[in-house]
Length: 128
Length: 263
Image (cartoon, rainbow over all chains, first blue to last red):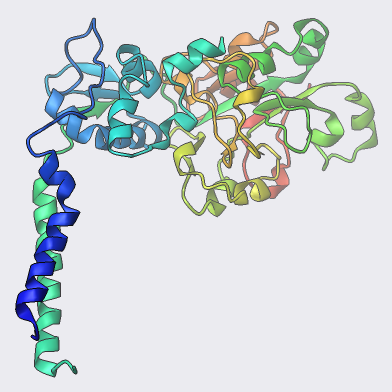
């Protein structure tokens, strides 16, 4: 390669330039979303870590089981039983979509289209 | 710079190996994501093999002047069905029509005169051999094990093949967001969105809670009877054995599950 020294130097400069945000914010965690958890309930249907990582898979599973296979009761890993329903089960505790769902979803720029059909509790309240 | 045959083959091999490994690792990482002990049917659910509805036309006619079509109102309020006045874009799950429109194949002049002015309640027939299910490209509509022609609104892509296939006009399409046309919302049930087909679902969500369909419950004349045709001793079976009942467009062979008692 011709001009190896110069080329390598500029490659390194470029890498540093494009990763400036990482270096400037190193070790700082400021924009971490803070979803508001329900105050009355202490326990979700599964562990916090599981729900955080897999709630979308769980909801997808729920839909298939309830609509396609007519299985409408979910038996959690601690043997507790729950009715499969987003509006009648999940949103009864997590009763504010904006303060719970949206905070993380906006942070990771994901826009699930659940609420095109399902009615968020705060929307229902305004509607009446 | 031309690539040598040998290095090309090496690269191909590496790519294959890489993609296989990433799939395996991905599978290992997401293992155990479905945590449920199990899924069961709700204990209070009404269970049937073939749900059918029998509509007593005479009772319906007698009560019609006083009941104010409570069945339609109850259904449409419960399921957040929008009220759209444009007839080409309206949404309906259960509605009323004349004898000529409900039974166009019955050309008997005296029958037409006999049933002149009689209201016929029309809804999805939940056919045993449903043409809408056959044409659905995404399996958004399907026949469930209880005989209900179900809709999975999540999967509907709005192609409207099912609307073309349905000989009863039981399906409606959402040409625009229906929410502004819903006056009073039921927060327990979802609405639909633009670009989705909808229809009566025989109140599958109520059956799971052990309740009869809402139209059956709302009728003050008890003109709607709901039951399991597969059950020999059910009320619907008894009625259909004793009285004259017609099904809409039976000659098409779709085997509707909604019966009209004519006598």
